[in-house]
Image 1 (cartoon, helix red, strand yellow):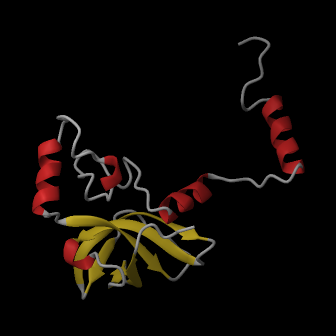
Image 2: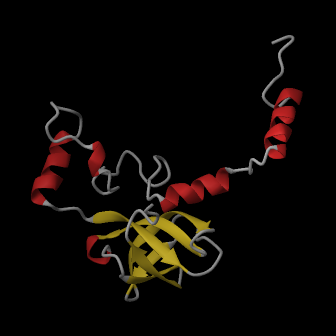
Image 3: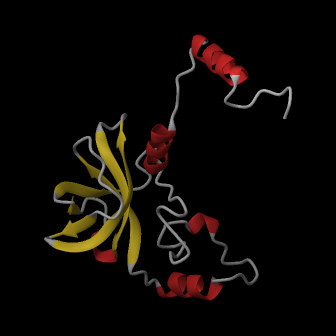
Length: 162
């Protein structure tokens, strides 16, 4: 529009500078991604899609078993009452500074048991943290695994409690 500054225009630059001058610390996409992973929150399109059961993604608090009918309720009810899920979203903790790429294999005892969906370096933990899906027998916290050949362990979600 004529006469208006765009978000990338001089007004945005002045606002940015004044925030920095007052002590604000820049917070970018990589820091946001690290915090999301530390919180154990799956993101649609990254850690889950239309083929993922909400129970696999550990989203039980978002599911109502008393609400009226909804799409997918029969599948969710069957999984809740029969207790059968083939895979679960888990946290992974590993040493190093280089996060593995999405799709990297998670192996237990030399056998593939799952894949990484997202990962980031955690500044406060000094480790690489990741989310991924593994077969249920390998989903217990403390289970030793390898992510792309690098030693890792299954961690309880969320990573951060505070």
